[in-house]
Figure 1 (cartoon, rainbow, N blue to C red):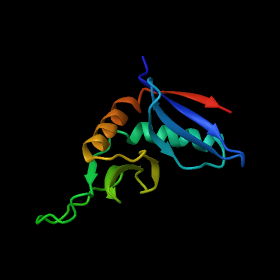
Figure 2: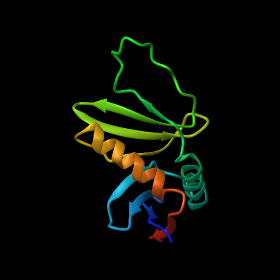
Figure 3: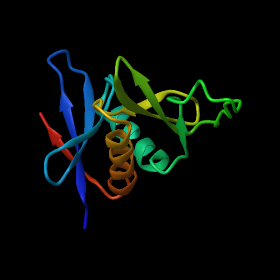
Amino acid sequence: MASGRYEITKSGEGEFSFSLVTLGGKVIARSGKYKSLVVCKKGIASLRINSDAPIEDKTEAFSDIPEEKIRCPKIEIIASGGAYNFYVKAKNGSIIAEGEGYGTKNRCLEAVSNLKYIAFSAESTEIF
């Protein structure tokens, strides 16, 4: 049984995007815009495949230990303006989806954990 769903929407300009949503209706991640429904569905397939990628924590840049870069695919955790967010990156380095922005790093990590749990088994729903 699926624990969430991908909601595919179409903008007024005819572009498609998707959101990964929990059964409770909370958005975990959103994609960018795609020119066609077929390419949008390929983005969902890519998120399914790459949702279990390793995490690269970019919030600890001032550590005494040199930062070890993780190759793509990966999930990057970043901090900006007092908020935390994540980006799921494909093997080619492009962003597949990003989080909603979180007030604490722990909340962001919880969202990534939910993403890893839900993304693979979620079903797709088209909302036009």
